[in-house]
Image (tube, rainbow over all chains, first blue to last red; front, side, top):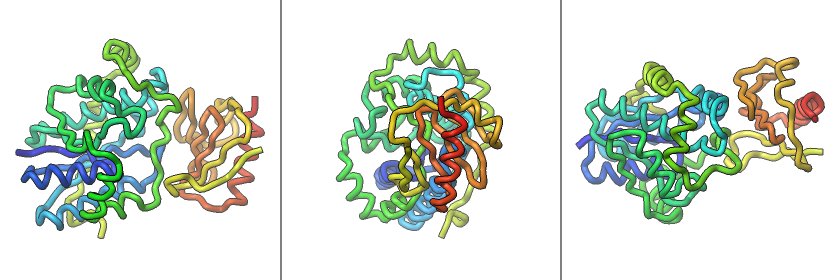
Length: 214
Length: 82
């Protein structure tokens, strides 16, 4: 059973990875680098998190990263800003799915939990999932923030996730909270999605756990 | 005119105008090196990278010289004010 975990460097995705690893899932990791809309801190956190999880589970995990900042730029140039988060995640899922298939993974794992941020609603999650065929596992879907923080502290990733860093500056001020698939698909017509996804995947960079921070 | 403070996630400094404003961010390309441009935000370089939102917020990446932040913010707002 192998999955690829979308790792942001934040509290939630690290804990999501841990919960699936506890179920004996084999795992690769992928980070979507949002520079220039953030700085390098998220990628550095991911490296440290992968190292912590590698040591905890006595396995040699790999962290892959792709440049996602360019995708944000394209979405901002061509689409309604309110749909940004949904469109962004649909791109991420597509890239993650291609990567997963190449690595022999059957699942995606994400750290989404309901209504923690305006964009993570059931309606939005449903629309995002429709971008791909692969199953998305969301072990934190019904956890509240305090539960996630508690777990993060227990497994040693919370301190890494809360190191100084910059969050994504592409988040709209009024994101849509009940996205409709038909409207999202209209917005996506403004993007050359196939080319966007292919180019993002072509830039995939891999870091083995020994090189991940420390 | 504006307030400077460390970002919530402590990853940089944020400058926010005290009143609601809209910036003509397209003017930035006349005076600054542009890293990325979109209809709603620009990323420019002036000793550091600065994210300039059309609604008025500036985010300074990896830069903590508050005196220079103030000077740069004044320059940007003067250039882009409607």
